Image 1 (spheres, one colour):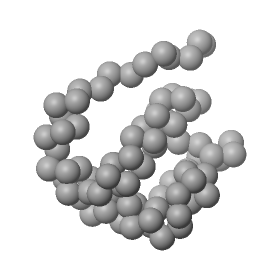
Image 2 (cartoon, helix red, strand yellow; image 1 turned 180 degrees about the vertical axis):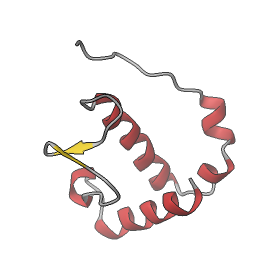
Image 3 (tube, one colour; image 1 turned 45 degrees about the vertical axis):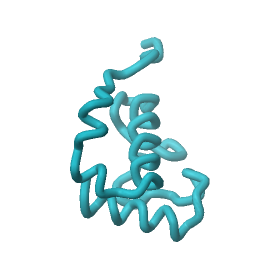
Image 4 (cartoon, helix red, strand yellow; image 1 turned 90 degrees about the vertical axis):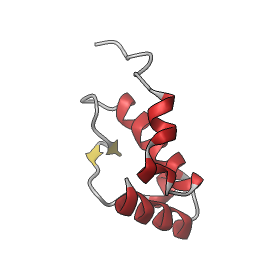
Length: 81
C-alpha cells in the first residue's frame, strides 16, 4: 500500500481542547510528533521505534529533546490529554 499523503486535522478542535491547552508548547509539540509518527507507522496508527511497538515508555533520545523536558511534557500529556 502506498503512503498516505495527509491526515484530517481540525485546527479549531486542537485550539479549543482545554486539556491540551493546559499542556506546555513542548508537550503539545511532542503530541503532534507522536501523531505524525503514527501516521507514518506500519500498521497505520501504531507507534513503532526500531521496529518495536512503543507503549508508555517513550525513548527520549528519539524525539531529540532534553530528557527532563521530555519527561515533563509526557507527564503533562498523561495528566491533561
